[in-house]
Length: 297
Image 1 (cartoon, helix red, strand yellow):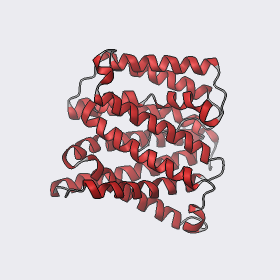
Image 2: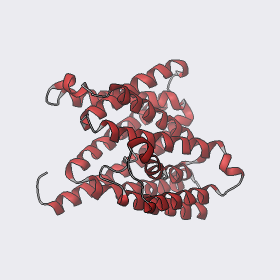
Image 3: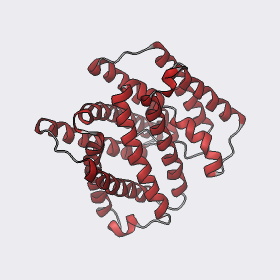
Image 4: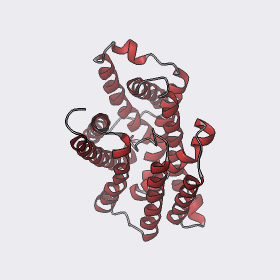
């Protein structure tokens, strides 16, 4: 990293803020386009662009595709790719069922799921402070859901399913990182996800409306830009410095949900999301090095 530590940290934070804003805009476009053209088709096209990005990046890296694709844990790498593809489909589906704001408020619980599962999956010790943070965070989830019939609503279950898929993806990412480079993990994420979505897309294919192709291309471009910003972010600063700013995605999503889609910002969602984010930040602070994954899709 060039420059002094303070400049690197500031640059990393700015890049993280830009990445979260880009992903929030991408989610808003996903809600609009998927509602008109189907979740599977839209996610499949996004993955084609993402796979192209990682293939070009791998080809230009030292050693080329052969070295980048070499993995000590290919089965886990494929499973990671499948989990992330499933998470994207679930989360985009939840946008239509629940709205951007409530989906992201529930999705913000994924670091708590990571912390809760890190013991049985990674063999990490989860002390009483982290357990207390996890418990507080899930109280926040209950506040968002308003205990009652809403807890079993399809939208809430789909959103929480997406958060769980992303949490397991993050745990497997940390597991494969013990043997594979970040470039290798990114390669397998893009390629295996694109292959899986293409296989599913055969059964769901429908022509994209001409007037929607601009949105699809903008959505795919935003996805690539967001991932590029994240890569640059982690090149500039330590993950522990920039990770807390990933929660700003919830703020950007709230602005877009209210301003574009007319979603209501209910007080229980605001309070519950605040509890979830505070608990998530606490568990990240108490976590061992290599914390939770950034909420990028």
